[in-house]
Amino acid sequence: MTDNNFSELKRLQHPPRYLPGLDGLRAISVIGIIIYHLSAQWLPGGFLGVDTFFVISGYLITSLLLFEYDNYGRIDLITFWIKRFKRLIPAMLFVVLISVIYVVFFEPEILKAIKGDAVAALIYVSNWWYIFQDIDYFDQFKPMPLKHLWSLAVEEQFYIFYPLVLLSLLKVLKKKKWVVWTLLIISLLSAAWMFYLSMPDANNSRTYFGTDTRLQTLLIGVIFAFLWPAFKLKAKPSMVSRSIVDILGSSALVGLLVLFVIVNEQQYWLYSGGFYAISLLTLLIIASVVQPQGLLAKAMGNPLFVYIGKRSYSLYLWHFVIITFVHKHFVAGQYPFYVYIIDVVLTLLMAEISYRYIETPFRRYGLRAFYMKEARVTSLIRTPLILAAVVMTTLVLSGQFDSFAKQDQKAAVYKTSQPQEKKEPEPDTVKEESEKSTDTSFEAKKLSPLFIGDSLTVGMGYYLDEHYTTPTIDARVGRTMDEALDVASNYASYNKEGQQVIIQIGTNGDFDQKQIEALIKMFDKADVYVINTTVPRDYQGHVNDLLAKTAKKHKNVTLVDWYSAGIGHTEFFAYDGIHLEHPGIERLVQELDKEIEKNQTK
Image (tube, rainbow, N blue to C red; front, side, top):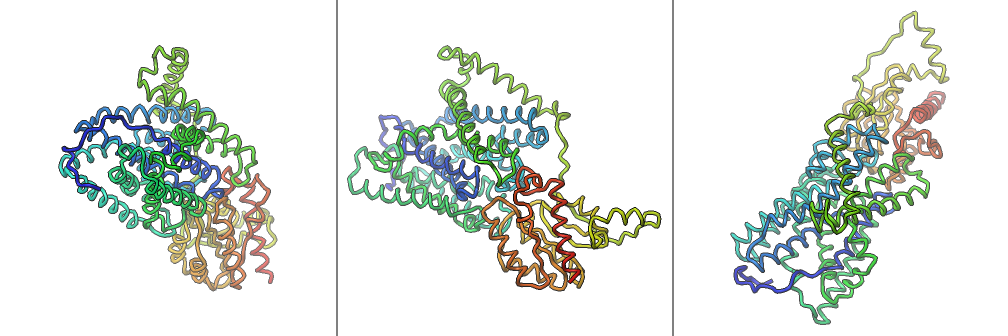
């Protein structure tokens, strides 16, 4: 890279050329994201497509800004922001409005929840909203149709502030190399900040959602726009240089696709430099697909990829909304194949409608799209529909429809006092209590078990309190094995012979043999019952294998095989295929009682 002074740059005569190869890369990215959200088991690393989009955004926006600065010695910030507004906001507004209206009429139980998500989306702060709500992006157990808009919030925040920073750096530092070094330092600080904030085997949503921690990926694209400016590359590069770039780009593309297959969100290395490394890999692909006459550029610029890439924004906006609403009416992990066909067809349909009638007209004409003569018929249809949607959504967000909402009774925590005091029945109620306890031959009412669990146990809490005389329950939504180890240390008094300790952990992530052994050791004198899991995620098999091996290894540990008991019984489960309806709770407790009874009669 030369050390040219910007004021001495020769002005270019030609406008930026279209780069179909970038649309091809967008197509691969959005396809990966969609497959991941259809089923994370199919493509566990598909979520990395978001990072690819970040790199592309940083690269392309900076290329355009530098092109303007090189030609005119300035950057028209107002025009830039207006173009971003016309490009991004109308289609996003459309999907938010339709989603809110749909919820009012068909999913009223999540109306109050979606109101906050919608407001955050409309003002582009979704990522911080989810951070403050302690929402896990990878938790697919709650229907949150607008959760994917967090990435658009990050990008929009970047688009608002970054041009100001870039223009200031160009004016103050003058030379490209100092601008690049400054941006490189900031990107490395962002990566280091992510590493500092993240923890292994924990909910790292703060680092995943944060604009400050995600800035690294965007800035990598920014820096590359200085080093490999797409609009200044030679129209006919030499065969040798073109071949080298094609080989590097093709190898990087293969590497990225492999990562889509083998990476999963539980891997800590992603937060300790992994996202940075993957972004660097993306740069090699970009270098190749923007190269004039490049073979990879031609391959990635094929008509199908360009078609998908041009609609990648609308596809991204709509796919998660549709998947959330469709899958909510089925049991996760037990979807009939036609459900996925419905997902794809509806996504393509709504994306095409959005692209043709919302995204493209507003990008070209701005607010004139409401009344332009060039498309009077579609304007006559689009305008009243959009206005009606705006009015309806405004009423919803202002609380006018709150009376239609069903109350969500599910708590995030279920915890009894510790230790529980023995509840002695009154003499007049002895007969009644005896009749109530006839559902088990060994009188479950006499047991005082300790339960340590996650959201599954939270949902069971009311039933456990009724079923056992003095249960001690410590459960929290989103609990991982690390948190369970911390909690278990508070219950040392339960480590005694004849005491039942029930462990239900594994819904929210994987763990290793060392962790489960540490937990079992805390209750080496008690009778420990480990409940395996039914979670349609790639770690389900490993978790269940570890629990089975642990039960075989320790005489005081018994496996409660809920996975086998629940197979084929869709009536046991809520839509997510994990949390339980009342029949499922009853059956799981029956399985637990059966194992406790076996041990007591030995």
